[in-house]
Length: 216
Image 1: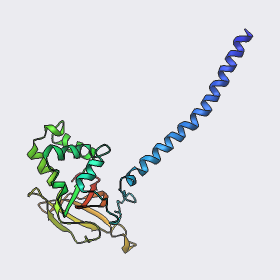
Image 2: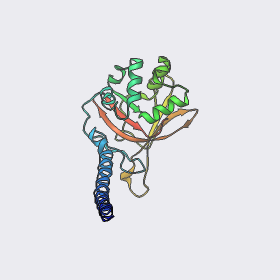
Image 3: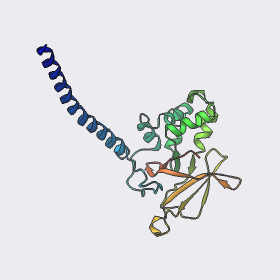
Image 4: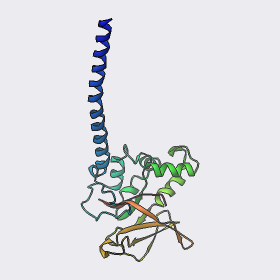
């Protein structure tokens, strides 16, 4: 009987010690993972907007990659569908072309378009439809927050059908330095479905790219 009591006491002590060790380790792991996720974008040359108003970072150092190379590098992170769509349509050279501005969609937004268009996979989308979709998010010329202003600029997309309107919105009424909130969207019958830019001013070797917060 005494042996059983001693054994149970030992087990209780052992469990208490293990719990005391496991809890701190769990917190350390959670904090470490959070830190990695929070900094992962800067590791790949991305500067996320500085606050909830989506103020863009300035045009800084080049990524050293073409837009296609950038998407390919991030295809295992958040551009798997975009990368697959480019290869499925054979538009690799299009994303290597010079002097173009690309609006990019991460996997969540791309999946949303597939679902709303009633396609199960990238390969199930007719190539002509997919090509037009990709080109509708690209314009000729270089557009970023240092050469745009509060006056809207309308630029035709390279699908030959749509037009994107871009401008800088005064994000603060107290400081002229905050005229940097980048808005863009498709123009249709005088109406624009403006969307904020999640990551702006990514300088590629062949142009500029902006990552959307919400699909046009």
